[in-house]
Length: 459
Image (cartoon, rainbow, N blue to C red; front, side, top):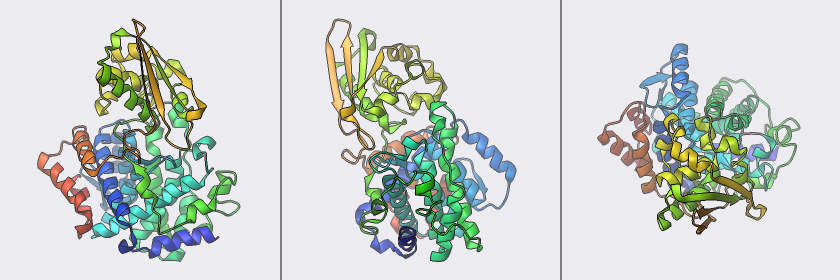
């Protein structure tokens, strides 16, 4: 039971002053990026339906639903906001653990902070830094060298239950005993199958919100004295054995705890789609720019990479002509075609109208995929694009580290550009001065006496 004890002590005992500077800056960028994608996702399918459901439920006006001007119980607000953040598949993530972080961390922490009242920016940063580290470590420790994805789980959702409970418990000031119970109660609710992607279903974007809701609920139950499993990680019925078949490495989970923060290895997305497609997008955009390629003059296109690139190109009949926006977000052929036709890949390219753009559909029909197992990586891997023109001219570009990766990171300033882009898609337009005020407040998050002033501005 050593691992769960170490994790709980870490969450209850770490101070803001204990965090390295890189972890602090990463947490700020995580807030900015997540609130950007929340605004962008607020108008997307499934979100309005959730808001209507939460409005029907009613309850205490504790926490703000972004962009809708509605306050509701904290777990419900976290559910909706977490779904918004993930709806565009534009949100940040740890590129080796393959776990999205902000959709669970930011939705949980702001909802709980509003319920608690007057939570400082420093305390919010600390909770997010601890939570991001924990979520990433759970992903890295599970099936090391592979991924929880290989067992059919959506890692963000599965690990999000425990991560949310720990962050909520931290902000609520739970002691070690209650924190253990919170994690046990969160684990009792764990789920998150990865099947929504294959079906092009909206279920994919719902998972992180469900995890945030359950995590906060677990912390609230523990606060009231309700008990949960003592060792939700390593017991015979714990997460690593029940969900991963005992395939885990506890040393990855706990080594250098409090010294190394995995939040510094979280990448931000420059494109609103699955990160496993991004190397091929970079390659396609580079070729488009370098050679001024006219899609009408392309004979055929080959995308190549490891299993991730190849898998997101199968089956070809669906990936070349997506049925839904979820299909498009996870289609290498369609997204590469979009890059070559439009010369960019933005939120405007993932709409029902965009799915019907004939020039993109025609170009996508020219795309075929080749598996190169030497390009397999644990996490986001490389990808390449070969374009053959009608006259036989061939152009090739290969990208090892995509834009937004740890090796080629987006800066805070890059995320401000993304924030402004996403506000244009919000269900409720934000005045320009409010947009700039929010950006400034997040940049100074550690100086704020009440971090929830930010979320109220976005309500």
